[in-house]
Image (cartoon, rainbow, N blue to C red):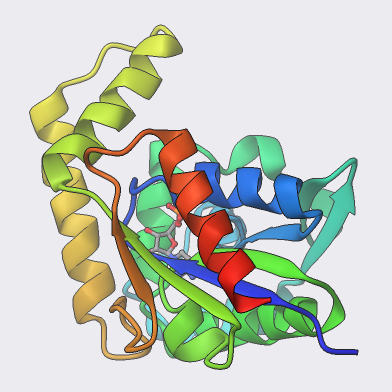
Amino acid sequence: MNYFNIAIDGPAGAGKSTIAKKIAKKLGFIYVDTGAMYRALALYFLRNHIQANDRESIEKACQNVDVIIEYKDGEQLVLLNGENVNGLIRTEEVGNMASASSVHKTVRLKLVELQQKLAKSANVVMDGREIGTFVLPNADLKIYMTASSKERARRRWAELKEKGIESDINEIEKDIIERDHRDMTREFAPLKQAEDAVLLDTSHMSIDEVVNTVIDLYNKKI
Ligand code: C5P
């Protein structure tokens, strides 16, 4: 059976996961959060005191670590050597480690295989950085979602504030620009817009507007 695959790529904080989750729910698709997989591996590296620039240790660790994806009540669970780590991977520390360690080809290939298997077994909305260009080059619909670094920083700042955490918006923007640079300039499978992807700049769009735009694009494809 041929499944419908939607690939959503873009830089950190563009709103990919919020939108992808809503679209998956509307269409009855599975949402695959590839960032969570990189974060789970990053947690393993942090726990084992492995530095992101220590390629040899990273490669060795990749042989000992098992990342499995399960779905429970529509939510993606990431199992790291059998442990559900969903509640542990959303910290800035893990995010920074994921950004730094995901430049390694060994890390990427390990997870890409898992992502491709998931896309072959169900209708999916998968978000990441190189889904349309590398993981699922034949995806049925490709979206490249972006927003200005100022707007992405503002959204992250507001999200933290909502949680009662005060932060410096300029620091957040600096961090976002650094991550963009690392994602876009890495040698292996960097972040870039696929030639056949639809560009969506969400800087001045509401969540509903973005969701409806993607659903319209989907309806035109089926
Ligand atoms: O999307 P999220 O912020 O959860 O991803 C964490 C990090 O993992 C990103 O900063 C990015 O560098 C990396 N990543 C990646 N390729 C993906 C998904 C995430 O390199 N497909």
